[in-house]
Each structure stands twice: as C-alpha cells, then as structure tokens.
Image 1: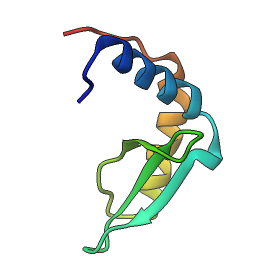
Image 2: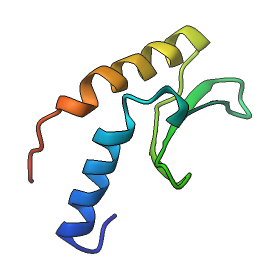
Image 3: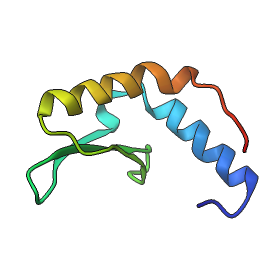
Image 4: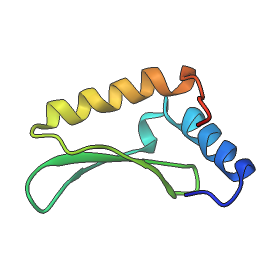
Length: 78
C-alpha cells in the first residue's frame, strides 16, 4: 500500500517504465515447485510479483504479457 497518491503514481510509472526490459524480470521457483516472477525497478526493488504458474511456459507467457500490456495500461482510480 502507498501512503500518498504521489507515491502511488510513482509506482505505476516505475512499472510502466521497467516492464518492457527483460533484465528487470527475476524468474523464480516457489518451495512448492510452482513458478513465478518478480518485476524489479532499476534500484533492485521488487515492484511486482506474479501469480503462481504450473509450468515455466506459463510464467514466461505471463512475463510477455506484462511486457506488452503494462506500458500502455490505463489507470483507473477507485
């Protein structure tokens, strides 16, 4: 959770900026054997964590989806 709207907008901008860059993704395996990824900012801070996937192909497809869709995603304030 963010403590201010400015911090929230900075987080959104960071995701949009870093999402297209392959080197910002950390591919991981959970203790239960499922696969997931973290998206990291330039400073190494985790700015997003995926759902769990049964196979590496699902995880890799998830990364490709974030790379394609995050930079152009619309922002909806609730």
